[in-house]
Image (cartoon, rainbow, N blue to C red; front, side, top):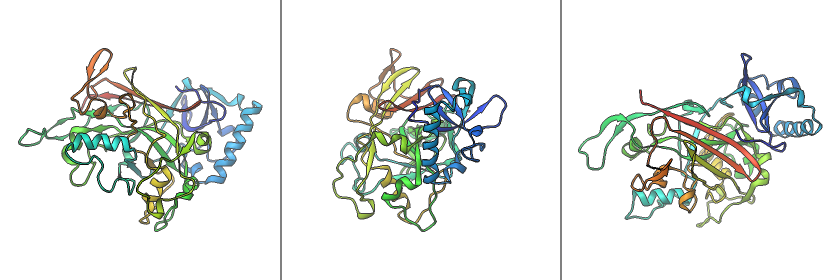
Length: 377
């Protein structure tokens, strides 16, 4: 479990013994039970949604109050060891959208899938490419991931076959949690990003590459993605993450006006990916091409609304170096160049494997998301 400093105070939902689930804040290796502090009547709820719906003034007020209570030691009677609680899914997910915002990742996959063509498709630098995922299969860290089955077709096969995925993969991502909703028909400006988004989670978008490869033309990801997406239990606020904000990389060609803004930022976050305890990659987020504000603006530019609890993700985060790639399909060049895990050649996930993704922004911990692969049913 990552240690959360006194300036972080991420929120999550925990269960202590046989008591009802409720909301707490992380402080080091402890949970602050927020219910008896009576800072909000939403903290006895089993999800963060009611609190998130209160909007930015309430978010800012809570953070200020908690920082003061921690400073004075007033939270000490309400601390519970994290080792004694069970962490649950922090939000009731309304909708889930996954983007494709890393230029390095999109370029790497373009070279793998279209070796004789330009790696980036013509639209990629004009808009944040994304797809709608399945909200009902977003699960809490620690949930086992059942190996999905579906249709697969090898390039040299005459017809598809059905069976368990043989190319099960991970995707290292940063997820954004929406608090304040928007109305149907209303566009959310890039400048209003902080008014709608509360904070971030670490996210693993599990992917069955063989199922995905056969189904995704012409309509894109479907069963190869929809079986599970795991998120970390603690939601780190944008206010806490502010110290990690960095300038958005230069965007060329210039974006259309609805994607332009004066204060567009990314975050200087580093992920660490471990498979069965072995460190295999350290993807950096700071060079992501599309900012979270642009993703939100594009998601709503057609008038689509966002709801409290909506989750949208960056897409796979990858850097320029071999040890900065955020998926196994990149790390192993689609299985052609195995990596080493526990001294053995390794390509895609095997039954029994446990994947843990942690993230930090300097001294600010974002926590971890973990999942173990169980056999197909």
